[in-house]
Amino acid sequence: MKLDITKGIQRKGNDMPFALMEPWEDDRWNGDVISYDGPVSVAGSYMLADETVIVRGEARAKVISPCARCLKPAVTEVTAELEEAFVRDVGQDVEPGDDQYMYSGHVLELDEAVRTALLLELPSRILCREDCKGLCDQCGQDLNINECSCQKDLTRRNPFSALASLLNEDEEV
Ligand SMILES: [Zn+2]
Ligand SMILES: [Zn+2]
Image 1 (cartoon, rainbow, N blue to C red):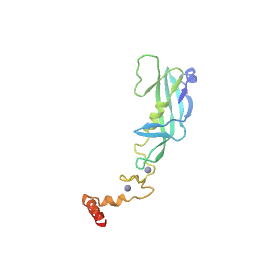
Image 2: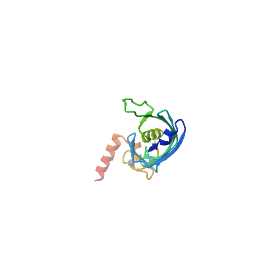
Image 3: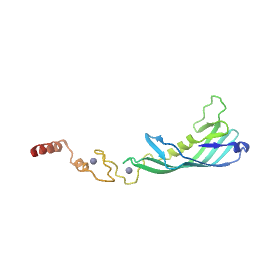
Image 4: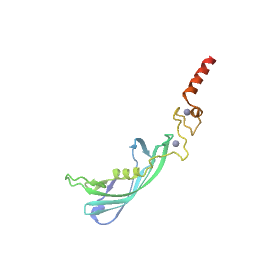
């Protein structure tokens, strides 16, 4: 996501509107593979204060990530406020500050700033729906689709009942 700041360089101190949109590749976040449903967009304005570029705007994306319970893809619409400073890279060994990014030439690379802002807005636990029943932790059955027989066993599971059922089977043979 590249922001051309040529016009802003010619008009320092002025707010310059911009809007960008771009499809993004799959990504990783908190150990999950995530993807984007449709393009990621960001719109706002930027301004050059001396050689530092202040970018303000709003980023939007639909993030697809696995449901925390059933692992099916769940779509989360995310909107994130963006306010970042881009410092011109003058080739010296100056580390950018925590909230700063570097740029050189007439182009800002916004990907990292936009990605960070968007993904921080993601809830830590995403569910495909509020009442998702998840998967059975024994047989893996998707309990949204069908009940499995493990549930009954769970309530009366102890070593003796397992042994008893074994003995019963032996008797029947
Ligand atoms: Zn689910
Ligand atoms: Zn089960």
